[in-house]
Image (cartoon, rainbow, N blue to C red; front, side, top):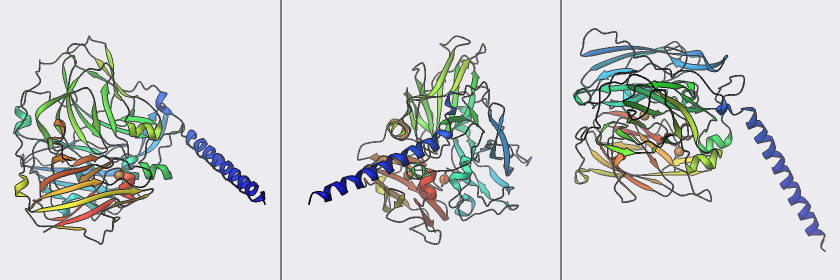
Amino acid sequence: MKKWYIYAAIIVAAIIGVILLLTNVISDEESTKDDTNSVVSSKPLPIPPILEDKDPDPNRAEFHLTAQKGKTEILDGIESDTLGYNGNILGPVIRVREGEKVAVKMKNSLDDPTTLHWHGLRVDGENDGGPHSGIMPGDTWEPEFTIEQPAATLWYHPHMMQSTAKQVYEGLAGLFIIEDEVSDSLAIPKEYGVNDFPLIIQDKNIDKDGNMKYEPGMNDIMMGLYGSSFLVNGAINPFLEVPQGMVRLRLLNGSNGRTYHFELSNGQKFYQIATDGGFLEKPVEMTSLQMSPAERAEILVDFSELKPGERIKLIDSGSELSRTVTDEGAVELMELIVSEESTEVYEIPEQLTKIDRYDVEQANVTRDMVLAGVGATLTINDKTMDMTRIDEEVKLNDTEIWVVTNQRTGTQGGMPHPFHLHGVQFQVLDRDGNPPAENETGWKDTILVHPGETIRIITKFEHIGIFMYHCHILEHEDAGMMGQYEVK
Ligand code: C2O
Ligand code: CU
Ligand code: CU
């Protein structure tokens, strides 16, 4: 009679045994991609070049880009296979002015199809570079558009269905900087590479042979990929000599899945002056800055109180989420070394720009966007991406409120999703009914939505065409956490 219990106990024990064995195998596999965090690099921070404008006409710019395969020495003395635009890894900075006409010739010299998406740019759907604008190997894509938005730090990256995560991870990304009269007139550092530095921050898994191939596991697809090596502008833990004075840093979280909390190792405060889509009205003082994938921020840091030769570090203090995924605490991203040189004296400006607020009363339409994830099934409004289906139809020049909810699901309790909208910059109305944080009161195109949270955003749709909205954890996007809206 009691035998039933014995059998059950044996079966349970066997199952537990198998599970333990499997976990062991998995963690062994993971440890072969060993922790390169401790590799101290003596490399200076690479500064991406500014791409030459091939058109002498000051009101028109022409840029040539080639997506290509390359080799990059990321670990000392070891070359990794990487992808880049006009180079081995990442791409040059495209710098334009508001009002300028821009033509791009983008050649695909990769073995696979790709696209070139202008993240944050307000252009028509056919120039947006989403998944419908595939460029076959050997082909050239030639978008043309006019810059109709204020000074900002945007970026560009590929957007092929199901290979965005791989292509970005392997190196395809670059900055797209817009200048205007406001950015010209502000008394802030603006000498590129001297006191105005781009920082593209990414985490990757690189094994001791330099293998940086995109090989996500099931957990990476569910949680977004977390790497154990941290790259800034394509180099591991680099150093940067900064003048003994005010410095402007243009930060891009170019990671596939990780959200950072940036801090300086001396606890020094800094000032955020710009969000995804341009200047804030006023600088926001802080000692820690949260950035989810695809978000940008410009910050001012004053090094004038430090002595020449002093070294401080830019660190990620580690978020709750990164701790649950990787169990690492704070990590060092790069070193800042104060040099002898000081530049002109800058003050933190009182006022940066003026932002016209959308009026809730003007909204023609309100739409719900429900983000949900159960295991590897990641949906928006219960659907996964289908390129042949238009999910939302928007009338040209309508102002709309989008109510974005991150639904708590199952036992997991859910995870934060950075929600991104193509073709527009939006304003945040509220988070769970509360006004947004001060540094979210500027133009945004990507916003982190926490589990159980509802965020209302508002924007006006001024460009026609087909556009995407999606989670910018690239593993989630590739898994189908994306939808399409058409403006006409
Ligand atoms: Cu950064 Cu759909 O884009
Ligand atoms: Cu985008
Ligand atoms: Cu997501």
